[in-house]
Length: 195
Image (cartoon, rainbow, N blue to C red):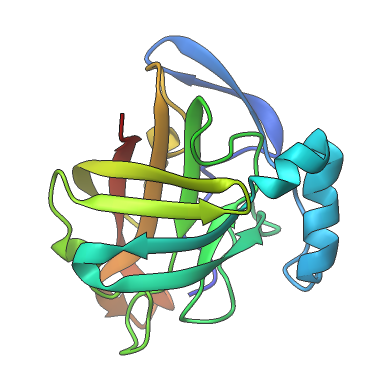
């Protein structure tokens, strides 16, 4: 699986959702760049205080998920890139860090027995997700789960017209489509920062 949600996020642009315009800045870099280079690009966005808040690890206690987080960008066709390892969660590098006002997005693999998000569909409303950084942790509570087809455009996954801090988790779901070379659908877990 090389693309998660096709054409959903512009590199730098403005997306409309519920009649409200939201500016989104996403860092683009090829998947082969080293983590060190990716982090230096992030630092150039907001200085050393931003770097200390970069997400490093995610825990989903109810699913017994405890995984490292790797920054990812966009593929050449504008889809969110995925981490290479099945056991790592990818964070879409943008100007919204987990806990900030707006939407932060993470994705993980599905399908293999060691895929980090193979049990993501078991989450329920109210389940807790914790994201750790060098500056501490942020807790989020699941508000809903939503399925989408692999070809659906879904700006609501990446932006919001609501006030608050949101973390959305994405994974493939459904059956493997051998003709398309990907899973037939996507699962998005919408969460809101715990207050």
